[in-house]
Image 1 (cartoon, rainbow, N blue to C red):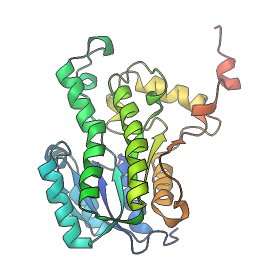
Image 2: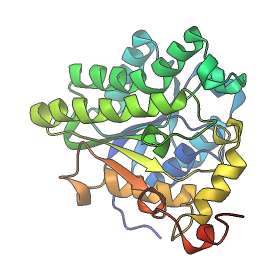
Image 3: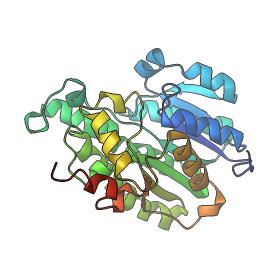
Length: 269
C-alpha cells in the first residue's frame, strides 16, 4: 500500500544487484511511495546483475559508477543534477571483501585485500558525501543512509574484515553527519539490518548458522529485506527530519537481547 511518503523526492540508490538485494527492495518501495531515482552500481556488478530489469520496472536510469573513483562519482552526480536538480535521498548499500570471498581467515588477512574492503565498503561512503556536499546537491532536510551490520559492535566469526569496514562506516556516518547537518541540514544515518539472505550475505562463512542463531535470539525474528526497505522509506521521508548521526538497529531486537528462552534451553547441552 502506498502512502505517497516520497512524492516529489529524488535520489540515488547504490548497490542493487538482483531481486535478493536490499537495495533492490528499497528501490521498489521508493518507487511505490512516489520517489524517483538513479540506480548505480560498479560496471562489473552491472554485467553480473539484473539492474536493467529494475530500471524498467521503476522508470529509472542506470548509471555505472565505481565508488572508489572520484571521477566516476563526479560524473554520476553531474547526471543526477542535470536530471533532478537537487536530491532528497541517497542509499549506500555497498560492501565487498576479497578476504571473505577467498576464505582467508581474519587473523591472516591480506592487507591489499583489506584496504580494498575498507575503500569499497566504508571510505566510499565518505567519498559519496564529500562530492555531494561539494556540489551542494542535497536539499535541506535530505536523508543519506548506509546499510550496516551488528558485526561493527560484536565479534562475529566469519564476517572477517567486513566487521572493521562496518565499524568505520558507522563512524563516518556520525562524523560526516555532524558537519552535513550543521552546514546543510542534511541527515546521515546507518541502518544495522538483521542477517539477510542476499547474494553478499551468502558468501560469508557460517552465514546459515548466524542467520539461525539471530532468528532464535530475536524476540521478533530476523527482519526481512522488504521490511528494511520500508524502514529506509521512512528514513527518507519527512517523518524523520530530526534523526541524524544514528546507527539504527533493524533486527527484531537481536542487538539488545542477551538470551532468549529458546537459546537458554540449549545452553549446556
